[in-house]
Amino acid sequence: MNDTINSKVSALLRRVSEQIILPHYRRLKSSEVKEKSPGDLVTIADKLSEDALALGLAEIITDAKIVGEEAFAENPEILQHISAQQCWIIDPIDGTGNYARGDGAFGIIIALAQNNQTIAGWMYDPIKNRLCHSYLGKGAFIDGTPLKANDAIKGLPIAALATGYMGQQQREDVLKRADGNYKLVPIPMCAAEQYPLLAMGVHNISIFERTLPWDHAAGILFLNEAGGKAARWDGSAYRPADKGAGLLGASSPKLWEQAAKIFSYS
Image 1 (cartoon, rainbow, N blue to C red):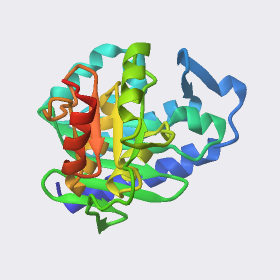
Image 2 (spheres, rainbow, N blue to C red):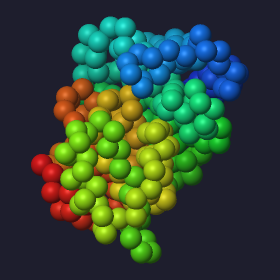
Image 3 (cartoon, helix red, strand yellow):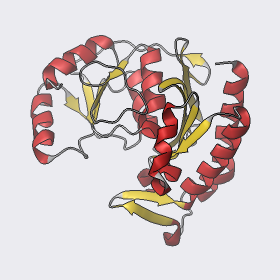
């Protein structure tokens, strides 16, 4: 991954944020917010920003495929493109529910996959003007500064557990196993916020049941490149095009191994 691509993607994220996302923030009309499915919102800003991002990314790597969350909602068959030689994966507004409510926990996520492996990722927070990016084998960065995760904690590790897509029995089992082992905190409802929290050690453990590529590809690479660990329950690597549920993230490999034993998933 060269510096030119990074600078172009970074500029694109900021431009789309300034021209589309922030102007609509806290100014959405009721007619500009809809439900794709119960509880899953989409706004006019999601659609406009995805169009702008797709157009800009197509100019950066002309022969790469593009898969966006909103384009997928209209045509699920485009998911097959993720395992192409090169593919951009777009979440135009991650944390749309927060965004629509006027909550600041939202961001833009871009991942670049090559043959079903994430090789680069960007997570931009328009409110904080914070850019997290990472390259496979070359580290993780926040606003250009290298980030290194660690397992230095005081007291119980802090866990943010996304159990909303679990069945009732699974949810109860997870919470029972967490009791006494972790200090539970609310999830931010935004992967673009959750993965930086893990990498910075603000949170130590996260569980995800739904693992859609636009939500997780960039964040998993970022956390792993920072020295944390995110993987499937059996320890296998996350691949953007692979189907299946369940993912465990931790601010260090040591904490990941401890959590895998506590929750005993496979």
